[in-house]
Amino acid sequence: MKTVLVTGAAGFIGAAVSTRLLKDGYRVVGIDSINDYYSPALKAARLEPLLLGQPNYRFEMADVTDMDALTRTFATHKPDYVVHLAAQAGVRYSVSHPHTYSQANLVGFLNILEACRHAEKPIEHLAYASSSSVYGGNEKVPFSEEDPVTQPQSLYAATKRSNELMAQSYAHLYGLKSTGMRFFTVYGPWGRPDMSPMLFAKAILDGTPIKVFNHGNLWRDFTYIDDIVEGVVRLMTHQPQTTPPHDVYNLGNHNPVKLLDYITAMEEALGKKAILDMQPLPPTEVLKTYADTSKIRAAVGFAPDTPLKDGLKKFATWYTEYHNTLGKIADSQATAAALRKELKEASAA
Image 1: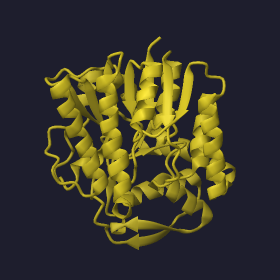
Image 2: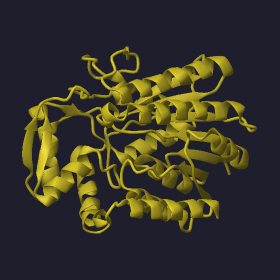
Image 3: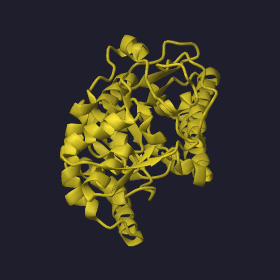
């Protein structure tokens, strides 16, 4: 049985990937700091089914910026693969909290590279999260992995591009096999509450206005979570065929949808009309994301293809229940502190 270390294990993608890996027969070690960028209650709820009744799952409450803790985790569990998904997410948040991004996304990623490099048991492959945001101001679509990525529109995008360059250098210097996965607008059950599916669904059900940037003239390549998980799992065992051994792949639906059409699909899924608040385009936003997925399909025989309406129906079914139960939990400082204490105790048990 091979062991996979998953960072960001309480995150949207991290919890879903961990669940799939366990089903596929891997031993999974998850680490997460459970910070309060968004609801610790949501993170705890994602972890609950993994912590209960999963003998091949181990959770450690740790931060990837803590090199000592990371070194201990590698020494104790000796992972075969590393799936690095921990990061400070969010494009607009990077404007007001730049140092948070430098720590989590740059220092944290450097620590992962160093831990992999010095691991007692050689790491077979590091698969790490990049982002479609690296394409920045590119106007040519669809976005191809061969396109230049020199126009980041946000600090978040700059940190993700930096991760790719850092991994490339470690592949060159130390032969560390690594693959960057450029995710395109991931959505689905248990998603992040700072992203449009959760924001829009909450606003629609609460009867409050939705901020519609650029008056709806935006296109996004919405990618369903199950497709992302499939791509991550396949790429994890697909070692780079390049010299040095580092590669990047798009993980997107190859089907950009106009923002207003997306809102209409959300309205249909929830059975309620939205109230629209038209806004100008923020400087952090790009007009269109659109993934060329020919490279990943050729490499692993798969590319995301779940139609948006199908994915939103599944999301809406989940969200309606969430909105009426877990979503009502008050995310006070006391609640967050209690959840972190409980999870820390569970990780030490």
